[in-house]
Image (tube, rainbow, N blue to C red; front, side, top):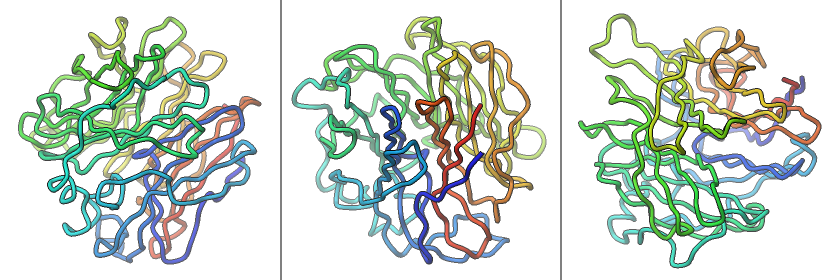
Length: 366
């Protein structure tokens, strides 16, 4: 097991790869994240240690050797209002994309059909917020993330807001499924759902809710197709104010046998992700096993993984990839398997509470 630093700079806050994406072609790996400025908020403050009065920018890291070394640069995509992609909740109002979208709304869908089966294709989703009023969009790349076409607006699907992170399954050259989070009936985040395009992204249709309406939230789906062709989706869950006991954070799995039209609860794959919770990153390994990585935010703070040998129906005890985090401001993993079978799990991390947040990766064999 090897830990490497992807991006680290004193005085900066590099964070939340799960809000962006990871893409790979054999041992070429590209990772998205965001970069702001560090601000020491102290151990008693549960907010992120970032300066909300200064902007975030979208960043992209690329490795050509399976995650051993990385080069980083600003993400080569057009962001509405030149703001910070998917970071409105972390900055003051005048820095938020939401204001730019009010002045210049995005057109929904693409003008021409995109080829989702292109060998160098990647998709990236963005959003303006997390609750009522949130708008979402996507980009497409056909050169391994060296450039991005878009942004292309996503419809509201009848919700008060849509909070998109990148979770896509390609079905055919012009058909793909997006797994998104919509607001609940109250306008709060959130409840995951499945949407489909059959015309290369020109239009999208609501397909189904993945979970029942939660009392707390069910957000940030991460989806794979298993060997049977069925879809397994992992969902970050948090209990609601009316639920008994202390607030809980965990990860549930749902299964669809009909390309997302209907869903059933499969199993709780992770019973506790620590204070505040953390999203899953679910991948199917080449041997058919499922691998789910996540950040664990209680002592000992760190990064963990669980493995399933039976398509997600049962899970082995957690594998601790690392447990040396300085505080709970860590995680948001994204994982890929490289050509030699090892998994590269990327995340944001800190060594101490008063230190910068940086992007790291763990290379390990499941």
